[in-house]
Image: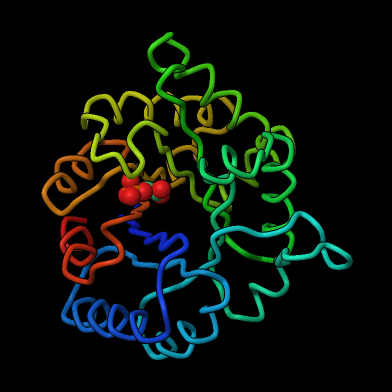
Amino acid sequence: MRQIFIAGNWKMNGSLEANQQLIDGVKAGVSAGINAEVAVCPPAVYLPQVADLLADSDISWGGQDLSEQASGAFTGQISAAMLLEMKCKYVIVGHSERRTLNGESDQLVAEKYVAALAAGLKPILCIGELLEERESGDTEAVVARQLNAVLDKVGIEGIGAGVIAYEPVWAIGTGKTASPDQAQGVHAFIRQILANKDANVAEKVQILYGGSVKPDNASELFSKADIDGGLIGGAALDAESFLGICKAG
Ligand code: PGA
């Protein structure tokens, strides 16, 4: 059985004061008993604060992005080693906002995944189709292309060392969730691609769903056979709603 995993992606939100309140609330709820594994991904400048606040808890933390480079003249970028020094367990790779707003290609995402793995971080690889790609019937082709770009570089064992997040871009921050059956269909397709390489690894890899997950739709999504938790944006900024989703796991 795969453990349910709930990761909060705070995106570019937070402040020292707001983070403290949010973490205090989440910590209190998680220590009262939650079956799922829980992680938060704050903006990088807050990682020391979050690492400090979560040091004595069962909650993990991670970065929202990393550089594919190890070090050097790359203004504004953050390396895998730096995230590791902040005791990150996870790092999100290839979020659709980075693919769309920062022009990250499948190739670059694959290189970032390699850098994360090499440092010993657990990458959360985001894949998912745009609305026009879904409407033109290209969902599976897009998801397969994004996954294969990484698979070709790291092999099935490399995928097995990370987590996958299926996030239909049209469902992110829009309030439109993929229906549990729609999401399950794509999750099963993703797992099949992996099973074609190695059935054992495919069975073990956690595939999260992301895109407008809320406390009131989380249970049904997580009850599906191939949905192993969620990558949560907006609802991760409020302790009560984040915990509501964690409890659904
Ligand atoms: P959302 O974001 O939950 O606000 O839709 C999800 C994500 O971008 O990971």
